[in-house]
Image (cartoon, rainbow, N blue to C red):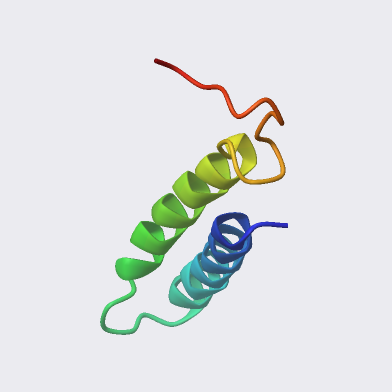
Amino acid sequence: MNRTLGIGIALSLVGFVAYAAGVWTPYPGRAFSVTAVMVGLTLVAIGRTGGPGPEDADESGGGAT
């Protein structure tokens, strides 16, 4: 699992828990839980698509010219 995906999952879970806590007991800054969920889901999407890394590179050494 890559780092972006892991951070995105963790941030999403923290955001969901903070949102649920805000439903039960209002606290200052609870709106940031929605931001955490949005950013977390974005990082999950980025982490799942990934990009060409060292393990994905072709062995011919070629590339776009």
